[in-house]
Length: 347
Image 1 (cartoon, rainbow, N blue to C red):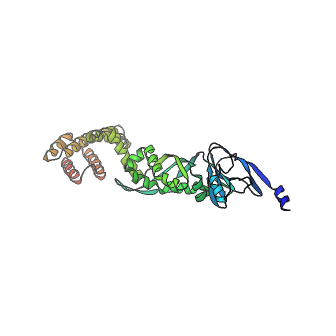
Image 2: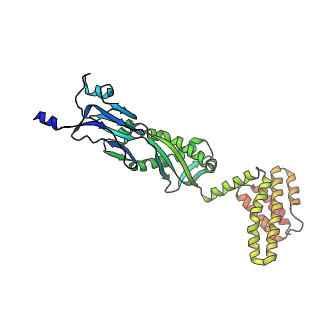
Image 3: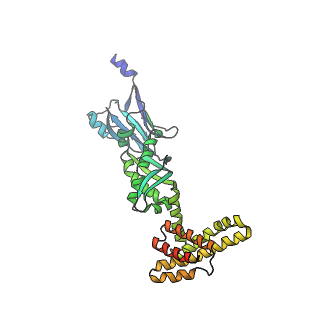
């Protein structure tokens, strides 16, 4: 009877895996009722690795190539089974194949705005999304930590865990980069590199290697976006505060003219344009005098105001100065001095 059972057994001559479809990271060769033939062939294709497991214990690992299964090619398994040099009988072992090709275009994103701490701006809320690519680099570690004894393990089962790691490490990436958040926000490639460096150790603990990380969009709060726009404007004028104020005034003139023109036709258009020109002159020269400091700043400011400035022009100038004070460009003392000077013109 024992001889008949032995004859009925099926023996495996070739062990191989031809991947079908996308996204399978690990696949167990079907072994039920079968044993591996001594001297059989193991075929591991490019972008694959194979792992032998004996009674729950990980044994030999094979990279791409074709192998004849003997005691020489299975040293660890030979040791575990205590085979002698005459190893010739069929044997039972679990064989797992792993796909080591890149799993590309894996999506990540922030479902809700997240708060990060920045040295320059304090707490900042942001939203971001992009994609990344990874591969199985250590099949033994991936088997023991992730895939286990499952017949197959799809990449989709790992998506949630990896996306969580990305979100968890965004703050660490910004802090560890040593770069101000505004600079990272303006350079998405730099942000992606900082995020990849923060994530790499976490991926390695799962037997994975992070191959690529991209940041496709980074959304900032409206108030922080305005600060970024102003910083860009400063760069456009080379850091010259006088030229920056002229740039700001030029941006404001169309809106002022539009508002004034709505109430007075051609005359209103002229008034809006005149107020904008006067405002540009006053702000550029007053701010330049304020930055120079000392008692001499009042004289240039007085010269900046056109002769016979009308009340509406003075009020428009005061409103603009108040806005500059709110943004921190003018100090309270500078604002009070210019306000007193302009109000004298109304007397």
